[in-house]
Image 1 (cartoon, rainbow, N blue to C red):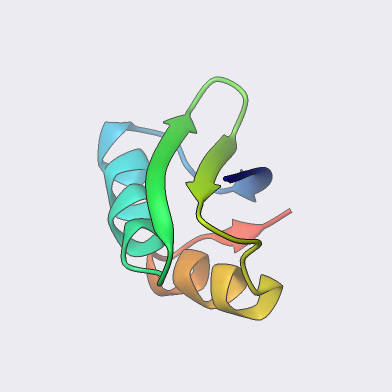
Image 2 (image 1 turned 120 degrees about the vertical axis):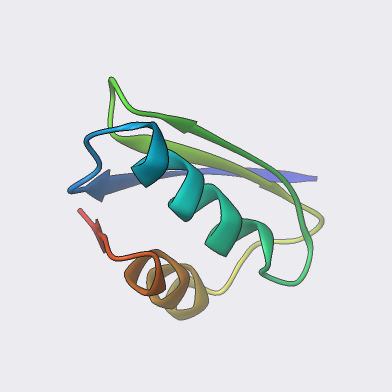
Amino acid sequence: MTVSTYAITGMTCGHCAQAVTEELSQLPGVEAVRVDLASGQAEVSSAAPLDGAAVRAAVEEAGYQLA
């Protein structure tokens, strides 16, 4: 299992965190997503390392940016 942490800008509320969680959870191989609003980070557990471009696209689809 691989655990990666991503800094995300623009999240301000629970809805923001939920949107990011939903998009990242749809990536192939993702097993768990934990978003921490206070730190502005998402921790993603996956079966194998994730493609950076796919992570960026998922975050952008939710309406936010990778820092």
